Image (tube, rainbow, N blue to C red; front, side):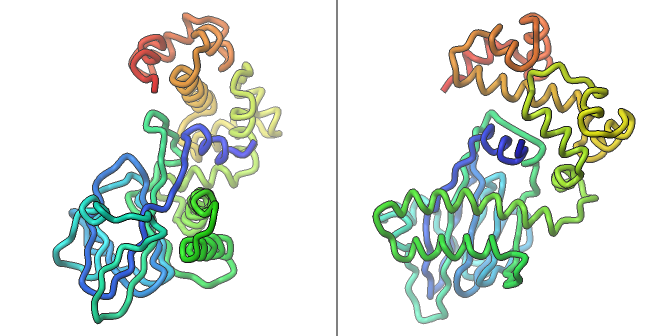
Length: 309
């Protein structure tokens, strides 16, 4: 089981390019706080990322920056100066990202591709517990070939749109998100408690195998002994390494993932609570309801009533 793919499917991530900026004069765009992740890719020139309470961050051609929590911020041609709200910039602007937002002037040209990722706001997973800003500096090395090639294809498709371009760019943005996460995790000091430890867990053969088993068969009556036998280590070894890397014991993670699946099915299906409980490994609706209420703060029936689309 590909755990990352399973998590991304469960959280329903989907991406799209929202705008392209072509600027050769003074410019600044203020992006609001939204329940989406936001990315910017500088394809030409230089600019600045400005966030409240943080030092302005210089960006140059080839850089990619991701704001996972959709924090309000500004992209601008200078570290200080006025900005225009994104809604005001795009009001009356037709053609979407195929038609760039222009800031004409006599200065050097800067080009930026801006986009976002939509999350299921009810879903969560520690694998996506990311820092406020993920910055990947331009790097022509072969190690970043996949990321660089995805950015190149996305930029080329936007520059010369054809029938189906929207579908192609949306899919490329989804691929881009995974490459950004991979590259960031490879560069991080995994001793920091910022989500990178989870990526270390996925590179640990036995822990990754145990997590994969949980994702592959969440309804199975797992015990730590059974998981340890399946992955070929002792119970104590698996428990110790799993807890250190994942951040919680194996059975606690099993419960978390079961309830994530159950909550999604409560939101999206008409399956009975009993059927959902059985699917995720509970033989008793009462036991499932008690566990769900303890973790989610509300009984399954009430959760369904208040969280249906």
